[in-house]
Length: 365
Image (cartoon, rainbow, N blue to C red):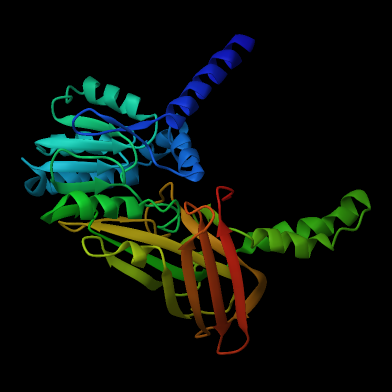
């Protein structure tokens, strides 16, 4: 066991060192230092770990949606030059070659790029796929591209803030009549009820009976902890207590970095019936040409993204036709822009306004 631990630690350190020292390869073979902040280094180190790629590849809804979309759009890809932004294991690059791409530039910022090259070689596509290790903002491509493909979406769509990197490649390297896959993205908000939360909070009341120690005072603190950040899981459709409101619908061929990093939207929701409002849930869809849609809605097949939940500190009773009006803001955190600052303000039937700020860090539960 000691030997296994030593081997694991050795290769874990090697991956971290590779990422720390990762460089950008330009088209003429010259190397450039990655210009990245400390959080970018942490971000790319996390993507050098195999676990996150196992999770994504085992998400068959996600991976098959991309495969189907790429192959269905073969007429837009066949004989064309493609940039795969955030290539990971390179599976989307391989799909593009299977769809007839003439050349694919697989851009990967983490040390996993070494493994990406091995995947390309194993599939005998080294003559058509070139792996470039480095940040999208730093790479130099030898030519303009016809198509961009990227799986950039994070929890609540914008977590990890990868979309600006895709837009950089679009603005710097995509031809004017180029195609971007996916082509549009939408974000939705709805109120939800959580029957389990009451049981969870009652845990503190149960301490008196279990151990003869009263801990009711912990309930308020537990609510505060629960409502500090975001929670990710798949909720049941019946837990959604109103029709969702679409917050954004971005055309990815036109949207700007400013628009995707400063989300401020109003919403109005009408409740179905008597229930308890515990918070708000976000989910997203992305669409591809030829009517291919990947959805993370609770009404669709579950994905590794699940839905993103934000709990209120205090629950609210609602009834049929109760009106919820509010505003949500989402921005990258100033100190750590891969994380998100989210603020939700709302009022029920135009009564007292409630306001809550959330921090979407890497402690998402």
